[in-house]
Image 1 (cartoon, rainbow, N blue to C red):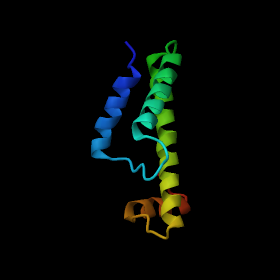
Image 2: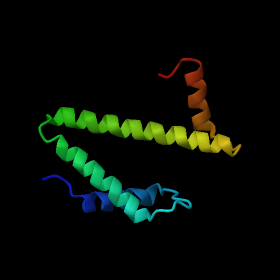
Image 3: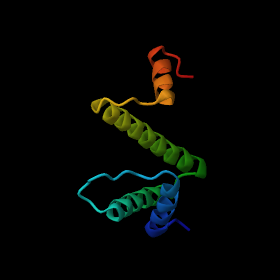
Image 4: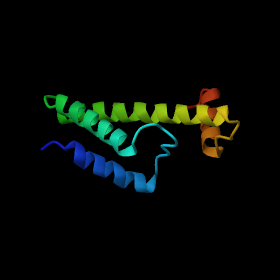
Length: 103
């Protein structure tokens, strides 16, 4: 049985307790954004119903990885725009990437 958007939104809120999202002064209600994303992801998952379990997992992992990367890039851009340090872990990662030693 596929997950319903309202259940996914509830899980998102649960995860956010550990790692809150700073919605800042966006002109949208937080819950509306959460529901929009939950609905989109549930529709995406439903469209993969004919995929094998492995293909579904790989697709969802690829989407998750892309979103984490995008979030990291946007976060670093925001910090740099405001002249703030990115932190030791991110700086070390960026240093490794600059040297071509990502692994």
